[in-house]
Length: 120
Image (cartoon, rainbow, N blue to C red; front, side, top):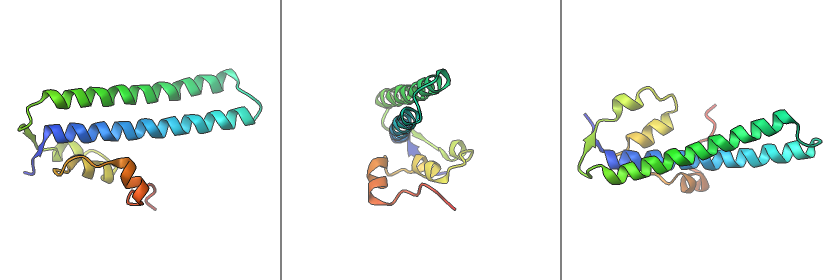
C-alpha cells in the first residue's frame, strides 16, 4: 500500500480544480469572441455562456472547499489513494493525485512543455 498525506491529495485536488477553472474561463472568452464576431448573441448563446461561467465558478468554489478542508485535516493523516484514482480515466490526473511528493503546479508544467494535452 502506497500512502499519501490527505493534505497533499487535497492540495493537488485544489490545483486541478483551479487549473480547470482557468481553462473554462479561457473557453468562455473564446466562445464569447466567436459569438460576437458571428453576428451577435442569441438566447441560446447567452444561456450557454452563462452555463460556462457557472461551471467555472463552481470549480473555483470546489477548489476553495478542498483548500480549506486541507487546512482542517491532521497533517499526519495518510490515505491510500490507489483505489480512488483507479477509476480515473485520465492517467496524468490520477498520477498527480497519487503523488506523495506534494502538489504539482499545473500552470508551470504547461508552460514548461511537460504537460501532455492530447494523447494520440
